[in-house]
Amino acid sequence: MSWRADILTLFPAMFPGPLGESLAGRALAEGRWGLKVTDIRDYGLGRHRSVDDTPFGGGAGMVLRPDVVDAAITAVADERPLIVLTPRGVPLTQERVRALSEGPGAILLCGRFEGIDQRVIEARGAEEISIGDYVLSGGELAALVLLDAVIRLLPGVMGHEQSGVEESFSAPLLEYPHYTRPALWQGRAVPEVLTSGNHAAIAAWRLAQARQITQARRPDLYNQYIATGAAAP
Ligand code: SAM
Image (cartoon, rainbow, N blue to C red):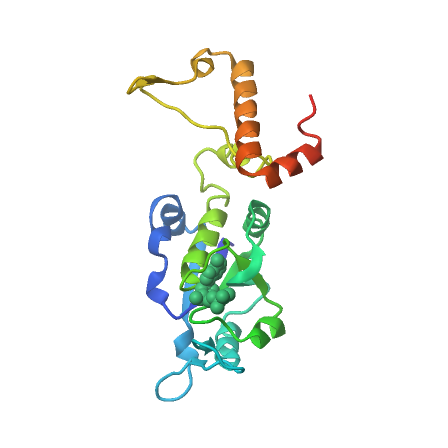
């Protein structure tokens, strides 16, 4: 069975959105992954299908009710991991993305307003994931980001399987820079080694570039890399 994504959202029209295009869109059409979108408002209360209420303890904004969210989860829950997108979550990593891609799929719960009542998150044992240290207006774009990262790793989705192995974070180094034709553009030549045909020299140059850029931009990753012993000659 193909990898299955369920989305719980107040804005179902945001899906598949960009995932209906390119690699992910083709893979969706080919049935390599499946998408089901549930409108949380279908489980809203009363004539107005109300989904939120004011926060206990005061403060601005509204909070998604636990009873409403729980009913929406019940409609789709199974053995797949339940993930809540939230800036309070554990940062998403390529390691987690890869593990998710090797599983049966995921159920992604998108918050809105001030967020979701914490009790339903705890009661359901949901995993809280953040896509970065900034605040979006809703979890939908975060869910799309997570899905995009997972889908490209599913079998048969990427044209060249190797491209998933060499790229940033797999090492754990950021990737070396890329160049294509023309060899001279606006007075800028591509690094000479890349046109040398010397594969060992190219590999050594790329590794040196990857190390240099990682050390400059992401000392946290660089220290991890050094700790793995991979840097030793
Ligand atoms: N009051 C929340 C806080 O300060 O942590 C922010 C709520 S935000 C306006 C509304 C929703 O957007 C969140 O419930 C979450 O689903 C989503 N969201 C915002 N930033 C996110 C991020 N960096 N990663 C994942 N989801 C995010």
